[in-house]
Image (tube, rainbow, N blue to C red; front, side, top):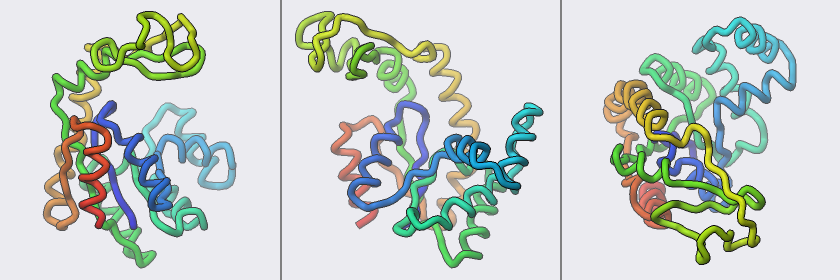
Amino acid sequence: MNLILLGPPGAGKGTQARRLEDTRGLVQLSTGDMLRALVAEGGPLGQQAKDIMSAGKLMPDELMIAMIAERISKPDVAKGFILDGFPRTVGQADALDRMLADKGLKLDHVIEMKVDDAALVDRITGRYTCAKCGQGYHDRFQKPAVDGVCDNCGSTEFKRRADDNAETVTTRLAQYHAQTAPILPYYQEHGVLKTVDGMADIDVVTKEIEAILA
């Protein structure tokens, strides 16, 4: 089964992808991670990617498609993949479909995790973690049982991501909507687009996704 999860940063794509990896044996494919791995491995594609990145240029669609084609040919992707971060344009979506068709494959579902922008900003800007063990908390939704003390390890040191601020999150949301809006009609026309409530409880979102995949 081959899927695309669409949703802005903070929508919970990573959490749901990990659950699908555990329950269905799918492999999450992040284009950013794949690019870094490709460069580290070397080889013709890796060298080409390294040269483009060194020059500060955007990766051409042809290279991205070739990279994905190479990755999904590996044995660990036999049960299917979850694509994250690609495609972002109709041209990329079309090229991806053609590459998969050449391999006798197809996208089974494209799942949009729909969010309320204002609520998502609140969700992201309020989150923080224990500096020692990484346990996650939130200013309003998930405070430690004892204020200032980590429930998990007892540490009193916490940290926040520098980019978890309202201005940065709002900018990232605008970029996501601008990039993603054009490809939604494309997948709607192809009959593979489904939408779930990305603002719902994590377990509820999981059930909604499982119902789509059933």
